[in-house]
Image 1 (cartoon, rainbow over the protein chains, first blue to last red):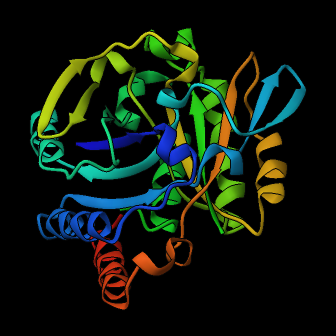
Image 2: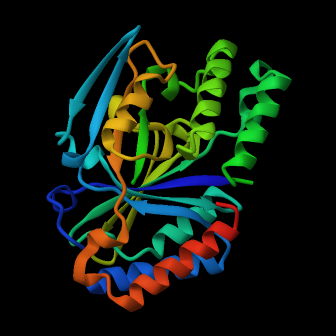
Length: 140
Length: 140
């Protein structure tokens, strides 16, 4: 099963505080273990929301709002994509993560939808297109 | 540059409501354009937060809270990772997405190694490059 593992933002990450070398080394060693275990499929840090934007969709209307955004602890500061046998396995791996922030922090775990979850509304054409696109972006 | 495109949740997505066949078809066509243009690197839908959880890090303590979570419009329902020339290009692509009905999408630039400055030592840089190459081989 695939999961998104989200590192939530804090005042520090939103202020653009750089990680220390110590944290970078600890996180790199952790990522090394994830890769060795065949779990890590991807992962990145996101720049603070001051560097980002939001687009609001309402019918045909599109409204662009520049960051920063207010709800710090609900913002995303980083993510991984993992392949695990179960949610429990993902939880065990998250427990072993070095604290990604200088102070208290939070990590959220979310399972991915598979096309199979959408059931009958997926036509054979859409399914074939999905498989083809996944192959083209190298996500097999 | 790479950006993360965060599709925020709404009541429907948190209730596990399925998209219509029409929406799946339009989204398939949009993803097709993104792949053809070399923009789409990854993209997934997330199950509602009732299927997820959060882990709090504080010193050596780890505390788990099961979903669902309350702040619906700040929750994540899906994401893409895009390769673009600028945030402006990402905004132009995003305006063409087949969302409507009050969806909000957030765009966040991804940290590259250069952004970390001196803490990203040559050894860490080499390790990062090696892990990314191994992750790519794992089909991420």
